Length: 273
Image 1 (cartoon, rainbow, N blue to C red):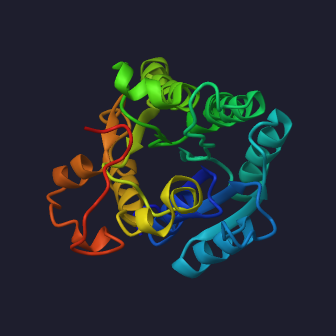
Image 2 (spheres, rainbow, N blue to C red):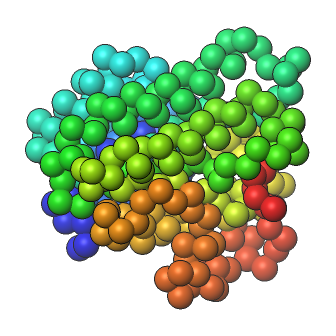
């Protein structure tokens, strides 16, 4: 029960990667604050804050469902306060909530551009800002953001400038915060997959069931988070991790069980060679 008594605040945790990380930490006894908008299930997406919190409880942790749109600063402040009231502190922040739109400049509507940046950049920034005072009080505080390695080669930027710069901004915040928060002993890292991950976004936006079958399960990122978050915060900060490298560092090289279709072809992620 490595995380027993520790509290993780996870955005976008009602489904997919966020939910998988929540359940993984719950298996180690963590308190998990499920922060997301969904209180009614959308059949195309699946999952709500309440179903995720129930899974956390069933896995051995303590779940707290908090409805929150991270575009709204007052809702963020309220969510953080609920976490403190119920669990007394915050030890881990997972910046997982994200909006995606793989469209070129002409095809990206202004409202979609604003949504992407309000969630991915502004939302991540404000959630981190309001969790920081409580993270500073933790004995081993970690911030982990789901964002890719920063590479300004035009081949990464050109296909979807609006979305890509928002994700690179998340990673640049990681690098900046790692230095800024070093004085407090708060670790700040990012994590990104080598392959596509079987989530509702991959199915509904990127490539349907065909791409899902060429993807890995969210569990691979949950296990990576488990390994990263247990490390001493003063020694593990400022990294833009790739999942395969994290597992290799732990001596894990057989990743077949993470595949949706074991033995089948895997699709590399958008931002990795």
